Image (cartoon, rainbow, N blue to C red; front, side, top):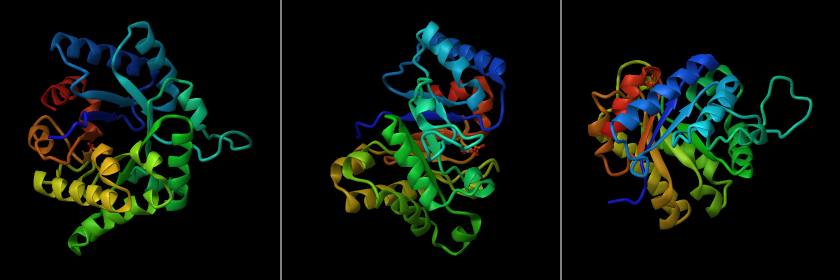
Length: 258
Ligand code: PEP
C-alpha cells in the first residue's frame, strides 16, 4: 500500500465565470461537508480560469475551506513585456497549490513544445507550487502499440532536466488523448500499465524515493461509473477530470468514491 494521498483534480478548462466558480466551490464544499468527507484521506483541487482565481481564493480563505485550487497554464517568464501572459508568481500570490502543464489542449492549440513545458515546470517549482505534468498518447500511437513508450518519453523529456528534489515535487497526469472528452475511458489495466511504466522510469532516472513519492493521476472520461475501478489500481493516485468536473454533484460523488 502506498503512502501517497490521492488527488481529485477538476479541470474546468474555459468554463464558468467568477460568479459560477464561486457558486460551484460553495456547493462542492457543502456537499462534501454533508458527506463527512475526509480531506486528509483524499485531496481535492479545482482548476478555474485565471479570471476566477481571486474569487476562489477569497472564498476559500473566508470559509476556511480545505479545497485546493490551481491554474491551467503559466508563462515561462516571470515579468515584462509579454502581453496576455500570467506569471508563476502572480498565480502563487493567489494561493494556488498546483499548475496544470502540457495539457493536450495546450499542446494542440498553443505553441507548447517540450522545451516550453520544461520551462513552465521550472517556473512553477521556483514559485513553490507543484506542476501537474500531462502526458499521453493519441489514438495513432495506441494503434501502433507504442503508447507506453510515447507517454514515458514525454515524461522523460521533462524529468531529464530536473534534479531529484525538483522531480519529487512533480505530479504526472497520464491522459490518453483519445480518452479526453470522448466518453472512452482507458481500462483500469491500461491506466495501471501506463502509470507503472512512468513510475518505473522515475525509479531508473532517479531513485525509489522519487518514484514512490510522485503521484500519477489518470485522466480521460473519468466519471462516478469508472472511478472506483481505476483508483483500485496500485499506481493510479487520483484523477484529472474535465467534463465530469463541471457537474458539482458528479464531482462530489467521485471525491467520495476515490
Ligand atoms: C481533461 O481534459 O483533462 C480530461 C480528462 O477531460 P475529460 O474528463 O472530459 O475526458
